[in-house]
Image 1 (tube, rainbow, N blue to C red):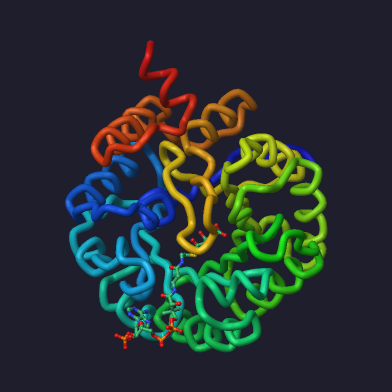
Image 2 (cartoon, rainbow, N blue to C red; image 1 turned 180 degrees about the vertical axis):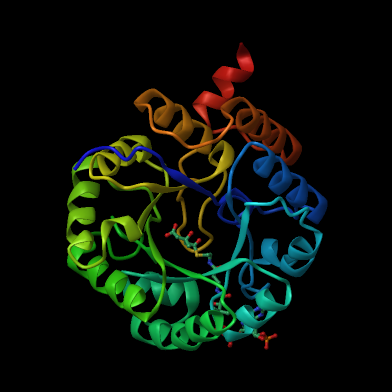
Length: 299
Ligand SMILES: CC(C)(COP(=O)([O-])OP(=O)([O-])OC[C@H]1O[C@@H](n2cnc3c(N)ncnc32)[C@H](O)[C@@H]1OP(=O)([O-])[O-])[C@@H](O)C(=O)NCCC(=O)NCCSC(=O)C[C@@](C)(O)CC(=O)[O-]
């Protein structure tokens, strides 16, 4: 395979990036972040998560976030919906797209959504059907594709199995999560090859965390295989509440710098994005984990 000509960036900072923050972040800050990301040219933003506020308190203002969006034409505002209750609330809030999130690890599934993989798929079936009836596209996440914080190694065949099931159930795209950021390039390539044997490559996305500093190298490996959708988080914000020690997603700024160097189009203004990364990290008092963002800020 060859590199894709263009990549669609799915910005998950307002959701994955903020969901694990220990101190409350006000809705106005989340809304300004989303607006700035849109102004930098990002066309796909995961804005909220309709999960239980007992499980993830930081996402409790999902309705207020959706209601307060300054919607930009051409931008998709998406949200996570783990069950029918979350979906119904998301649809009432006018969401453009929803996502169900499963795992390739039984233990992670239990810790994250309190059910087995099989039970999660049963739970997602009516979510997908109802969303489709409302003409709202559904994305499917698979966590722990390159390793699990509880079980260690995960067989690529297991990842392929869950991915195929979600795809056949009606998810239009499957996002492959290296939830704990333990992957390395060859492993990422092999996992992708295995999954692409079951789900068309153009329906797959890479969602890599950067705990071990391998995320950009892993992305390069899967870009070479033709992956054309990448999830990332501005300033590398984030971490999963149910994957202790996991760092944030690969930083969006670093991904765009890599893509620019490869001549792969993204339509994103790197300077505006980097400025947004510096603004949000200063506002919430977090280190900026984008090397590109820090370097551009120092010029
Ligand atoms: C799925 C559940 C709800 C099951 O949780 P449960 O306890 O099994 O379900 P339940 O039906 O018994 O509900 C428990 C409580 O939550 C309420 N509840 C139930 N559903 C909702 C809802 N939709 N919205 C608001 N409230 C809800 C429900 O009413 C009840 O409240 P109580 O009666 O105790 O007062 C729970 O486990 C949960 O919310 N988990 C979310 C975990 C999460 O958000 N994790 C982070 C996102 S995944 C991720 O980051 C990975 C990803 C996607 O980025 C990819 C990667 O990197 O790998």
